[in-house]
Length: 233
Image 1 (cartoon, rainbow, N blue to C red):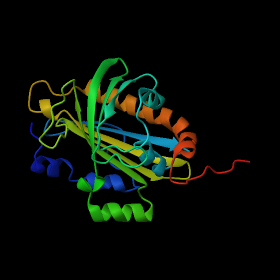
Image 2 (cartoon, helix red, strand yellow):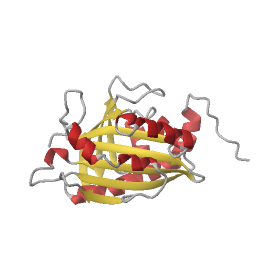
Image 3 (tube, rainbow, N blue to C red):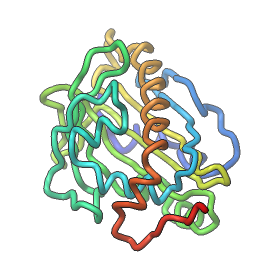
């Protein structure tokens, strides 16, 4: 199935609800969409982490060791960023290649190209959500799988979408992760199986829980923004 603007508009008609702190219909679970794709959602609490740390992380990690810090079991290999990625500065417009597994599901190559969140969310509402504290970080990308991931003329993987929305809380931050996957097989007899969705839920919960345990100290030690660690004594 080709991901046209019309399909995107219908699929993401309620996407702005991710910017609200109020509960939404699918916080964690999977849903088969009318177009045959699979919507996967996971909600995490990242203790002692703030959205700015999560956003910074995507400008920082660049090695397999970094990737394994994120998920020691499922993350297999960092395949590299393209030249749009600038350490400590930028990941928007950049493409990353990596190899990951989903628990017992064997490792597979993945390609993600990151985009500005305003491309998928209402830009004015997004700006307002940052200003009033409903949102502290948003990460949006196009995603695909396989050794030779199919892409469009813009270099975007054409199998699906990945969205992470963080909101700072007294505990740290709450993270909503939503994936819309399986476009390439959506209108066939071999749709992306529910098993993949459940595996991704487990993977997503685990990777951000692992990351939350290391990210605060790593951020304060490595960030170039002048953001200093609080004194704990």
